[in-house]
Length: 204
Image (cartoon, rainbow, N blue to C red; front, side, top):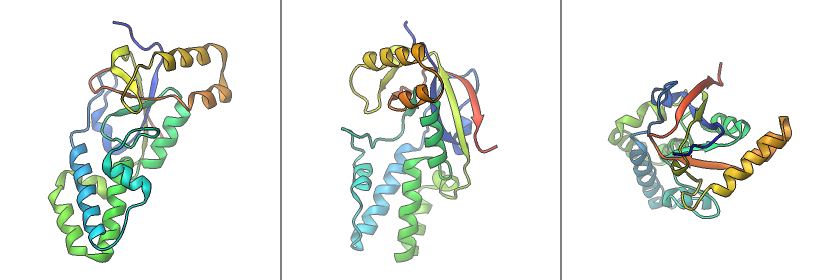
């Protein structure tokens, strides 16, 4: 089976450190549906109090795809290290976008109905350590991803054209120019595919 000929970079949080082992395959986070359910339940309470979500929050609640991807739960990777590092720093405290949205929505609900917020937290005990914060950024380098296991960021269509473009950039550029060009190439990897080559603690 043909494999992607270059490494891919996944920006994540120390909250997920137990999912990655150097030399091992990628693994899915088992609580993604809990996080989505908690976010929707929290926003149902907020909307009942007259608070409307912003457009991007509404897209996250719907788990929409399209020109922009608002789905969560799979392993999202970048062809360039810079984009992955930026994502890692942006979502590390709670563990990423969906968990950050959960924490922020619960904080808003705390101010309106602390008992309701507490009840929701209690319904999802597996999310407790994430919602407590304290995560630090990690960079996971993945290699050997089979071509059929690499998908577009939105999840549909062939990535052949993008893979060829990345190969072209890698063969003709270097340094900051290369990283700038690679920022636009982001994908998702099917869980269980690819080998973890390196794990970098960006908070050290």
